[in-house]
Image 1 (cartoon, rainbow, N blue to C red):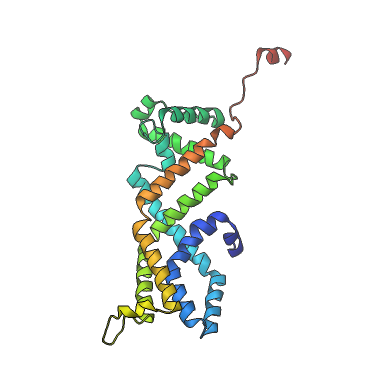
Image 2 (cartoon, rainbow, N blue to C red):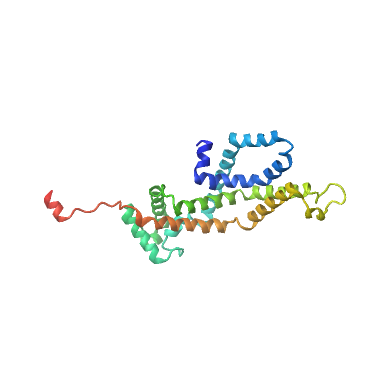
Length: 262
């Protein structure tokens, strides 16, 4: 996939590029604000690096770490949310909706779903059927550009942000420290800490502190495993809600009249 295609694709842009750029933002803001006006060549170099693959590299790192994290989350959760939600033993979906989705999968996808007794007797086999049904359903809804795509993007974004969290926290903390330094609130000579300088930190320091503190708070307080799980189940629910709109995959049996005319 070329850089242009990467940027044009909404999933790639929002779920993969954005987490990578948010990690780098606390460094980019002071770099461009402090040194950009005095060194236009530096600003041009940053733009050139972005155009020559830095954006693609950040997206690849976010995707790779996100997939690695997802493997750990699946082991922790006991399966993907789409698999868990289809289990008879799981309470996320109410029994009426679960029965309706199971019946729709059998009718629309031609996949026989296990009963509660069959699931209890062989959970691994039941999960294998649930995974296969979900994969087929995703294939049939891949062109859906409505709410399902938005939920998929939200899941990918939160998963990748959580995967980038250790790096994001470190970079944001460095951005806060650097913002304090260029605001002269932190100094190498006595007094080492001059908080009064924060009353008028200057544009570059103010922007650096605002961006770095905001991102640091987001990394620490918002992006966690619970958020990824919650959004994963929201995606699963939107996915199953598309079942009634799919054409039936099970051929109809010929009627007696049609058989007599053949």
